[in-house]
Amino acid sequence: MANTDLSIIIPARNNKAKNAYIIKMIADETRSLEVEFIVLDMNSTDGGVLDALNMMKTGNLRGSVIQCGNGTVCSALNTGIYRAKGKYITFVYPTRLYKNYINEYIKIAEEKDAEFVFAAPSELEDGYKNIVPEGIKGTDMVVSLIRSSLYMDFTAVLFRREFLIKNNIRFYEECTLGYAEAFIYNSLLANPVAAYADMDIKRDYVNSLNHGSQKGISNNCFERLDAMIKVYENCRKLHKNDTVLIEAFEYQKLPAVVINCINKLLDEGFSKTSIRKLLKNKGYDEYLKISGSTDDELKKRIVEWKFIPWVYKRQ
Image (tube, rainbow, N blue to C red; front, top):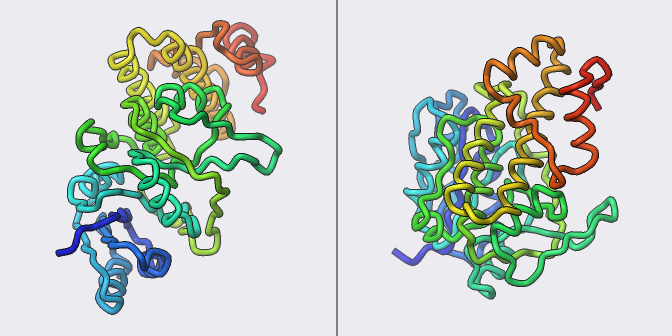
């Protein structure tokens, strides 16, 4: 069997005809590469997995379907990582498809001997500029992401498989919200050799699966917070002397996620009193801390919520 350049890992739970479309789209895009497709079937009942198998067969494509049962997406993705044979791995989420970026990522990965590749367009639509210094450390990228001085899409990235295995980087299996974000942060905390493509990757809205058509999506906004708390604990374990990194988590990232949860619960009709009680009972209110590392807008929101909640408004 020829060496495999890239493993395309696709989670599938009732993705309908999207599985076959995704495989054909990527196969057409990556004709110059040795690619394998790994479809992770989580008890689909709509025939979409059979469509994927037929597409691989008729297209003479390398690939397989792995039966992952009725577990979480994260559990399935971890299975995909360890079953993959490619030098590189990318995850393709049917709810968030992109057009024509994989070849450029592979080219950059090879040129830079990179373990992690992402897109960072130098010019964004709102005039914002992405500035990524050559040879930037993963921990510095985490700080930049937290402080919003760097933007990347967590669902359009490329990894060297050996890097993930060597550092035992896995998705949090019990998590159903914010798992891609947590995975990227944990990856960056391991300080991969990173490279970026100066390109504005385009979403494929037409062919992306509607989020609302998937079953089993959790509405528990605190799952993202729980995942970020675990990342923070990992950060303290790996980089206990990096004060800037730790304070970025403690005084910006975690309180921002808590505020986001508060806003979502207000949107769902929960009263401020019930939310405050919930935060206290779960111990989440302890993450609403501020310091000189907290940006002014977040600091204002935290002070209002903690001390004058009657004036706090969802923004």
